[in-house]
Image (cartoon, rainbow, N blue to C red; front, side):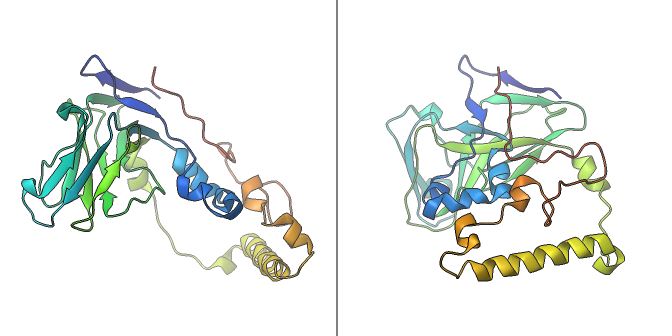
Length: 246
């Protein structure tokens, strides 16, 4: 699948595969947050665009465009601006993206990267046809609180999305008892988890040595056997490896 970025200026945006690491995950005791594989995959399952300059901004709580003040030593054309008012900070993405027919771009802020007093907004852009750029917008959540973006800090995260596939999903609710094998596997996992958590309270126990259950991380069933889902497309991932834009 092709994902093309067309430069609109001599310098392309600072864009690269998203990193898995997060400062708050690094700071957890023994970096235990990285034991959560779904977090790791989500963090890195896309590309980021980084701010070319450092800046500070503050919103006074009013709806006008002048309610946001931005301060920086960087050139004005590289800075975000107050374009919409209502506490929305707007970053221009100086590139035109093209995806294959039927594929859009999901655009938002970096996953699992909370930022105090400001929240990224998300959008889905029809990059398979539109000859338009898009903006990345963040909305202040509290007035009077200064926020800061460092030079090189990601302000945008995106990945290709097949919206038709989402629309084609057929949601159902079923009784787990209708799937005896699944019910048995779930029951086995639930019992093992309860026993493991109880054993964690015991000094010198095997659970204390193991620290955490690794079945999901390793792609294993509760009894240690390999996953065997239907369909040849199954692939257990512990990392996402995306190509850079070249």
